[in-house]
Image: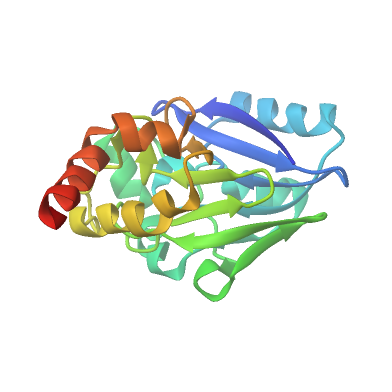
Amino acid sequence: MKIACLTFNPIQENTYVVWDDTLECVVIDAGNSDARENAALDRFIADHGLRPVAAVNTHGHFDHTLGVQHLRERYGIPFALSGKDRFLVDNARTSGSVFGVKIGAMPPTDLDLDTMEEVRFGHTALRVIPTPGHTPGHVALYEPQSKALFTGDTLFRESIGRTDLPGGDYSWIMRSILEQLIPLGDEVHVYPGHGPETTIGHETMYNPFVVEVLNDEVNYRN
């Protein structure tokens, strides 16, 4: 499996193009926000001879969905999102205005990730892991063979997603990280929705939010 990260829009969101030897691909969290960014994504897809089969989102915040409608129209592919996050897409114009970002047409949801255990393309399957907290319907996407984990805005390098936006919950995001992501193993490579890549092992050592809770658990047991 191959992974490319393209950073788009004023909020510097990471859009991932993921493909395998069949050249089928999915685009995770398409944040391309204008004609120039649309062209950059299309050019990457064309230069690598890729065939998009789905636009898949870890969650529904506008900075992660700005480019989905372009992908649906250009390639005729479905949009996959948790139904629990549909309200965020529906309210994208209001949310975007708070950050000074003009929002165009928002896409309908074609596939509900709440009903799917995995997203398939080519010979590859991405496991859908519910990780609520940043948003109610947030998911992570995990490919076990390559140990690649797309965490959206749940887990960043040495930080976590904010929980003060509508539908956010700090206790839930920490539970998602500790119960769903950390057990995947230290060697798992993390591809977050913003900022640089990391690993689960690095985060258990240096992420202050994770370290505090893990230390509290150790102290409690002792």
